[in-house]
Image (spheres, each protein chain N blue to C red):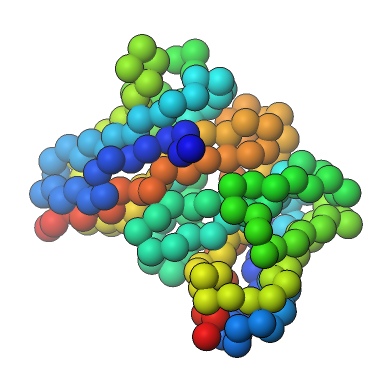
Length: 110
Length: 114
């Protein structure tokens, strides 16, 4: 049973606008949620995380929001840039064992 | 630091052949994992290790074996390759008990089984 779900396989936005990527989870027994970014033919790279005791974490253009009552997290990218075009995965980790969503392909058009 | 390295980058096997995918990290990470990624899908955990001498199964372990004799190395063995094992394989490592335990991924091995 997949513990994190990304229901939107793709998202297209205009350069300079906001990108919002969503993730739902089923198991609340995790300390952290993480977002990874993946370019073609490369391994994923860590982007940003959020602790389960917080509801927001911000790092430059990237902000992650956590809504524990809805079991939902979202990644906001403002402003979006063409270099942000990639696949984004949400993930959670417990004692060395991680679960990933299926990913959302973001395309930022110039 | 080289980070996480994987060899080979590409491999073509015939059904029934066996092979080992190599993974090494030089960051002294306790945790190491193997994932496979199929088209349109996320990363699915095959096996993972929380330290040398300790391994455990992930979501899709059938047809694969692992061992962890050193902190640095975590090879993945395909016992008898099947077309269903055609995929891209990623190895990852992370520290233990460092908060959010960000994983560092290798560049991947693209495997085709004919």
